[in-house]
Image 1 (cartoon, one colour):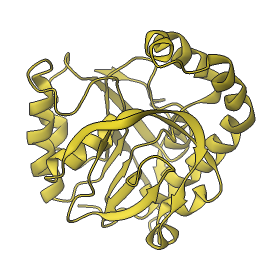
Image 2 (cartoon, helix red, strand yellow):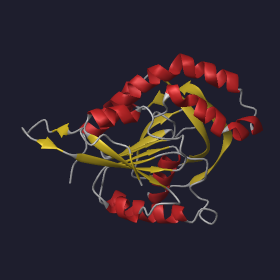
Image 3 (cartoon, rainbow, N blue to C red):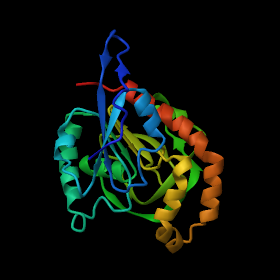
Image 4 (cartoon, helix red, strand yellow):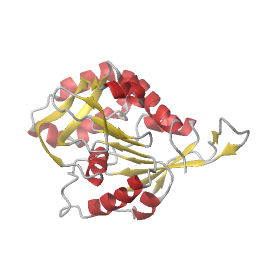
Length: 252
């Protein structure tokens, strides 16, 4: 586990004249797919960011804890339980966590794992979606944190997709995939796309995923240029998405 928070940062309760220290746990699969532009807003809100590495750290405890949890993305498939057996541990833990409605925010693979835990199918998509593009928001999305992403180019980077869980509220689609985001109440949020990507660190993605990009003939120069156009705008809006989600959680 990596503690990546400033111990001198605290969160002030809005309805109490007291200081309260808070923790947010993060499950990470790749070093360069991190909390990115989410990190500054988490620290500003007084959260210690505790990072746990999938496949290395014991995740059973944090999956049971009441503290908010972010599950990040990665290049493996949520259904590849034989090759990556620790995914089963995550899914089993998520099933109980989601039943108890503990705050959980999934990104890309994280969203697919949430969908799996809720009984939805995750499977290979018909096209590798690696690009910057706008979302089509559902009517319900405008009453959710995703309202800040209206008209915003987000970073799509996935090959797998998922069906909408029966308990999920559909929030967004793209031109290639109908299910780009869903929520369950106010505590569970799942994003297929990457809102968290830090535009200043985007080159790490281009290096780390170079084989995938070449295999699928994705133009790296175009991705880099689009990051320059859209990255900072997305980062600013993504911070509002996360802040709004955290501010409207039902706490236990």
